[in-house]
Length: 496
Image (cartoon, rainbow, N blue to C red; front, top):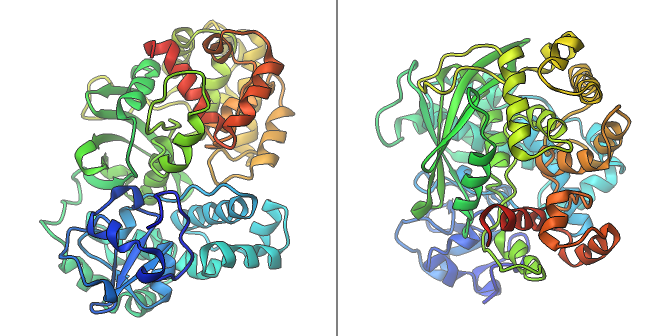
């Protein structure tokens, strides 16, 4: 039988891989890496599904949901494949296909069509090469992959929200209700209305907060992630209470910003995060959930990351994650404010900026009262006013240059953005050096191999000031150097 890190070829069978034993054991380490199609029912499941285990001869195993649907299987209504974590791919061809998949995911939640030649140009390859590599890695065409992502998003919206079917169709990226109904019926062999009638429990009220489930692949260092957010929480915008991370949030939608809040609670025994979302954010729920997955690094694969961390000169800690943020612009601003100051000082400066430029928002949590300033507010603010908050002139210039670039669309700050182009654009901005670029790549772009080699905390954890020696040592941690940084930071914060 393969180990949990063994890649699964597209469309392989149980007899070929021996994965049936993992399915019987409901091994959560395979969640999102394997989907099980059952020929006797025509349904595909996650390996953690709690239905009665089918006979081995009736099982087909697939490396992604799109492959299972291309083979004629429809998603299980019980284990809900749309909740499964995504994949971490590491070699060069896989990385290209994964970047393309992230662009597709972004298009799905933004409701945009994906013009493949544009995507290929952003990735620096030809359209033909991208199609070939995508088919080779994922086993399906980019169009089939996009259709699967849109339908799974629609399935989640139909199950977890009170949105009208027409709203669901548009929110999941379909140009018309007719096309949505046809695609849904073709893939799932039932109508969207019929699926909604089959959901368990009462439908949420239109004005009530929604709770949506997100899965992750264990082990997961829940304590480490909660501590990271707790130590950096900026009052009025975010807080951590027990297993729950709360924050305010505004998101662009149809030429305006919708504002609200969300609360993500870990449920470790189920390997899930339950995200409660304000009703006002319902029109952008798909995008918010995608960014929440990034913020908590729910798609990470410990079977790939933990072995590389064994080379660190500190005690191992399983299930490391790379905490990011729901709003990439906010993360980048906070990185700039953290230049050459302590975590506590950066938190103080950030709170002052929020109180000066952040808009008020209503939430059910007394401590959460303001939104993080949006790019246009920061770009147009009086530099002297910002300087009076205790932010030095050089950083004020860096903040406003970044805000202007984001507002103009010259910089995108999410994991689907073109990595090298984005980093080069950031380097060209005043007041943004290599340390800042690497931290933004690590925490806003979710680049797992980002490495701020001059970071003082990193150097302290390694007990040296020899940057070149550290860079040489870090070669053994690739392509997961950002996770190594997180682990080394932990040793300073908790002493283990």
